[in-house]
Length: 312
Image 1 (tube, rainbow, N blue to C red):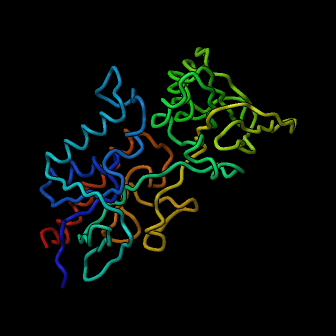
Image 2: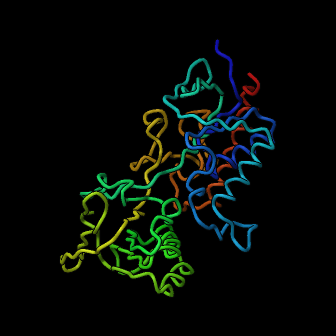
Image 3: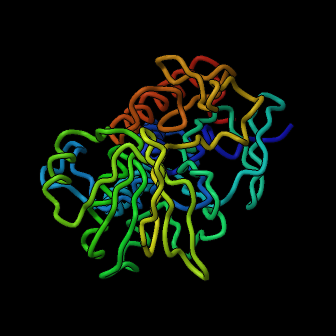
C-alpha cells in the first residue's frame, strides 16, 4: 500500500491556497501546496489591492502574495512548482500525478482558481502576445504613449484600465452595458481620469491588424452600427473560467464548471474540499478567498482527526 507524502495537498497557491496552507501548517499537518505558475495566483498580477484588511494605504498584489507565501512557508507548508496531470483515489488516499512526480494525501483542497475568459472573436487568437492581453499589470509598460482598448466594465476591467493610463495616452473602455458594474469608488476615479474614454452599449466583434493589433471593430448593441477604434493593444476582462478540467467527473461541478461545496468547503467526494475562485459562490475577492482557505483548512483538520488518517 502506497504511503502518503503529505496529510493534505492543496492545489493552487493563490490567496485561497496559501491561506489554507497557513492554517494547515499551524495545525501541524504535513502540508503541500502545488501550483504550476508559482505562488500568487491572479492577485500577483494585480497592480494595487486596497480593500484587503490590514493595509490602509493598499499594497501591490505581488507584495501581498509574497507575504502570504512567506507566512505559509514559516508554518511548514511545502510549496511545490508542478502541474497536475491526473487526480485519482485509491487505497484510501488521493494520488495527484504531477510533472514532478506523484503526491499522495488523505485529503485534498482544490484552490486552483479561475482564468480569464476569452472573448471568442476573430483575431483574438491570432494576436495573442502581439497586442491581445489579459493582464494590464503584466504588459502595460509596453504601451507608453500608445492607445489601448479595455473590454469589460467590472472591477478588474476598470482597475486595469486606470493602471494602463500610467503609460498609455488614451484608453478606450468598451462595455456592452450603459453603466459600469465596478464598485462606486472605482467608477468615481475612472470618470475623473481624463485618459479614459468610454464606449457604451458596445461589443468588440473583431480584432484587426497585420503583424500586430492595429484596430478593433465595435458594434453598438442598440442600433447595430459598427465602427473601428484604432489601437495598439486590446485588454480583455469579460469574465472567468474555473480551472477544474482535471476534476471533471471526480467531484460535482455546477453548470459553469465551479466546484459545488457546503458552507464548510466540503465537496461531493469525502476528503475533498474547495476554496476560493474555483468554488461556486457569489463574491470573488481576495478576502473571500482567504476566508474560504481558512475554513477549508479547519474542515480538513476535523476530517483527518475524526478519521484518524493524519500521519499515514
